Amino acid sequence: MIDFLYNISLQVPDLLIMVGCAILFGAGGVLIARLAHWLWWTRMAGDRDPSRDAGDGVHSSILALIAFLMALITTNELASFGNADRQITQEALSITRLDRELASIGADGAQGQKLLRSYVGSVAQDEWPRLAQRPQSLSPVSERYLEALWSEVRRLQPIVRSVNPNLGGDLSNHLEKVEESRVYRFSASVNTIPDVVWLMIALFILSACVLAGRHKMSRYAMQVLFIQMSALGIIFALDIIIDNPFGGDTSLGPKRTIAAVARNV
Image 1 (cartoon, helix red, strand yellow):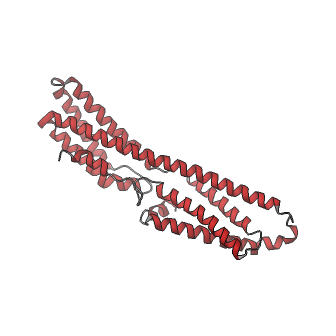
Image 2 (cartoon, rainbow, N blue to C red; image 1 turned 180 degrees about the vertical axis):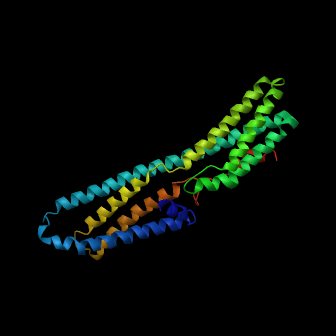
Image 3 (cartoon, rainbow, N blue to C red; image 1 turned 45 degrees about the horizontal axis):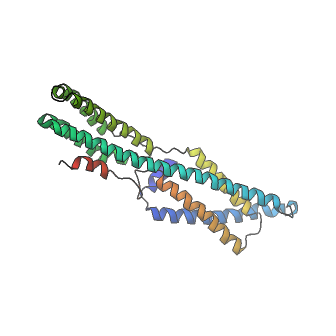
């Protein structure tokens, strides 16, 4: 269910996600608080602590815990997004170097360059969309091109060894980095926050809304609660937007990877 909702969010503009989460959290918080006041807290009027210190303390503690957890999650998501950006740059650099070495071989390296361009094309057209959707996966088409490229490099190594002994090793090193970058890119696409954590935060937010309803919900109190829950909704929307660096409006496209081989076309 979570994967289904996440895939739908990729089709929605980021601004609409933020506005929608702000309204949903704000209106939902007010509704839950009013229902809690009517269904529960009004029946405990005689047991309520006149000083209200206990309820206020628990409410503040839960809100502080929510803010702390959301800050940790947002920090982790932003770090993952930045790491994915660096991995894409490193992958593009490795592809450029491999393409340059294959070009230096001349006619013997033409087939390798052709396979490298086919691999880059499959990454941009097939693998990128697979990384954006849940559950994420790598492209089998890209995998086949990568295997063919390894076979071509192995074929070229004995040929170039007599001309340049270092070139054969350089080809392997560059291709290894391309393959490693592909794995790192896949790791960056996978959500590092378990779904159970989001469920726990949802329960904390529910608890905070219920506690907000322990007093009669005046118009002023409802406005304050709406703003408070809307702020949490905006942070939640930010985490949704940057959760996967390869999908949505705020995403890292394959332009750098494509440009890595476009210079010699």
